[in-house]
Length: 294
Image (cartoon, rainbow, N blue to C red; front, side, top):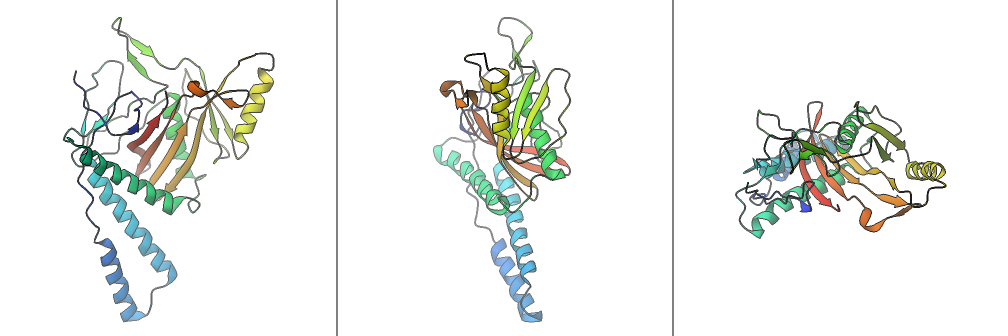
């Protein structure tokens, strides 16, 4: 099978790279329209209130994100990963033929990321019902319990591929499937949350440490348990930064491997940055913006 490459910066979760083509985002006319509307209100009934100006500002950026999403999805298609072992779907952009076209797509997602971070960081609470729903989605995905759906305008719902540490893959020596993850307990460090309801699974147990001291609690408990085990390694999944704004979110996941509180160089299991979009009550994956490591 000839595989098209898929856009991410760094290595993809399945070691498949992406190529994408999206035209450069045209300059938005929303700003001029918003200024015209503000001028009319100021002329007719006095200057708008600060709250009204802030709402207008937010609405402008919301419209811009929706326009950028449309630009990003233009020309998108799906890779054929076969039907064995439930591989999920992988978004591709088969029309890309040049570095300029790939850079154009990269600029779109980077601008979206900048808007979400700029509007949401420090201004939008994350330990909320919406934030917990998003965290539940990311934890389930990283633990290999379930996977999010891709954000798409298609009627067909497509499930994302597994993360780098989970999922089933075709056995090259037979008709069966091989399971990537071998641990029955997956440990999470969640500094931005106080608790959460974990996804259920008969095969995987989720263990989490919460709050600003989460990583210290994880290390201390592990050290006490493995006091007499030289070379014992603590593997965990660290979810932060975690930024939401309106129906958008940027979530960073790293997967360190530590020995006595020190990250073990080449044994680090990498990480990823996910761009998420909420559709109704469901958080969907718009883009795997970056991946790195193993």
